[in-house]
Length: 554
Image (cartoon, rainbow, N blue to C red; front, side, top):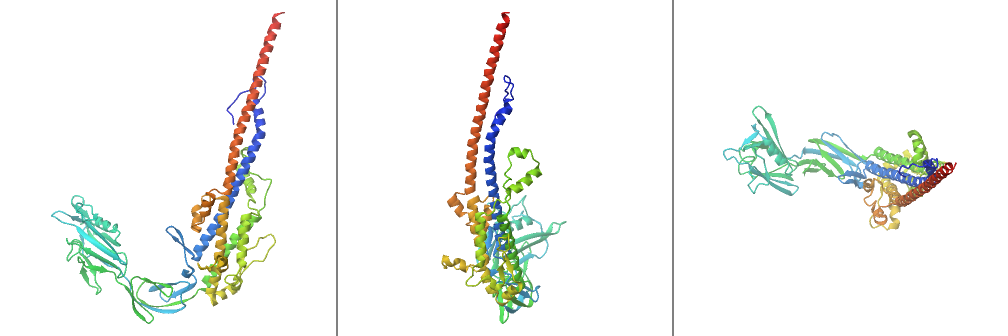
C-alpha cells in the first residue's frame, strides 16, 4: 500500500517488517470485507445459474411440445390447436401427397385425387442468343415488368439509358455493351417476385439461354412485360423468349399481355375440381402438400404413442429440474471453508484452490427462501384440480415421500395414460395445457390453467423474484425470450439494481473507505518510526560530540 521506504539505519530495526506486521491486523479486517463481497458474488452466480436452468427448461420443453416456434425476433407462442403430434395423418402414397394433422383435425379417411399441380409462369430462350448485347446502331434496351402477387402490384422499368427519367433501374453498360448476366441480376434485385438467369451453353461463341419465371405459383401470381423495343417481349423478341401455353404449345412472350401461373386442381371426396393457388392447402385442420398427380387416401387418427411420448419427455425434463432444485436446497454447507484471500491463494496450487472453492460454494442455496417457495408452488400446482379434474385421472401422480428428498417429482402410469389418450385425447390436453379465457376472474385463473402451463407460470414468477434479488447477469435476452415482460418490474421498481448488487455496492464503499483509513494508518506508523529514527540520530550525534569533548580533556 506504500511506496518503498528504507528505515532502521539508526535503530537497527527492520521497520518494513514491523510496519507490515502492524498492518496485518488491519488487513484481516479488509480481508473479511472482501470475503463477504466474494460470497455475495457467488450467491449471485448461483441464483443466475438456477434461473438460466428454469429459462432453458421452459424454452426447450415449449419448443419440443410445439407450444413455441422460432421466429425472426425470438420464440413465437403457438396455440394448442396447432400441435402436430396429437393426430397422425397417413397418406397411402406420399410421392403424390403428404399430410400433417393439427390437434383439432377430424378423425377419418379422406380420398383425394390430384388432377393438376399449381405451377408458376416461366419463359426461356427458344434458341441460343448472344451473351453480350451490342448497343451500337441505336439499339435500345428498355422494358417494364409489372407483377401482381395475391393482389399486391409492383411495377419497375429497366433500361440502359441513365438519362431517361422513366427508368427505375439502370442496367450498366460498358463500352456500348451489356451482359445478359447483368440484365438478369437487375431483375432479381428489383424485388418483383421474379427470377431471371442466363446460362452459357456455348462458351466458345459466347452464347446461351435466358430464362425468367415468377417465384410464386397459381393464378394469383401474374406478370406483364411491356417492351416497345421488342427486346424481352414481342413477337420474335431479341431474347427469343417463348413460354408453353395451357395446350402445351410454344408461344412468343408478347408485350402488354398478362401471364400467370396455373392453379392446382383436386377432388376431395365428392367435391370435384377444387382449384387451389398453391400446392399447400388445409382442410378439416389437416395440412396437405401436393407433390404430383394421382389418387391417395389419407387416414387421420389420434397418435396415442406420439402423445404418450411427448408427455413422458416433458415429465422426464421436469423431474430433472426438480432434482436440481432439491439438490441445491439440501446441499451440504461447509462453514469452515470461506472464500480465500489473495495471500492464501498465493500459497496454494490451482487444484487446491479449485477443491477449496468447490466446498466454499457448496450450500449457498441451502434452504433458500426463493427456491423453497418455487418448489412449494410447483408441488401445490400438481395437487390442484384443473376445471374440476385432477391429473391422477389420466395416470400422472406425484412420487411418494422418501426420507432425505424434497419430493415433487411426477410418476406416470403407462397403461392408464395411454387409455386416457385413446379414449379422450382432448380431455388429456385440457388437463395439461388449458388456458383460461380473458373474461375469467383472477381468482379463478389458476383453477382453469392446465398443469404444464401452471408449471411455466410458477417458474416465471419465481424467476422474476430471483432477478429482483440477484439481477439478470448477462442473460436479459434469454429471460425476455421466455416472457417479454420478465424484466419490466425489475427495471421500473428496482432500477435494474438487484438487492444483492446493492449489498455489493455498500461493501465496495466500505472497502474504499477502509483502504483510505489503512493508508493513513500506515503513513502514521511510518511517521512515528521516522520520528524515532531522527531522535536516535540526534542522540547518537550528541553522544559522539560528548565523547569527543571528554576525549580532548585528557
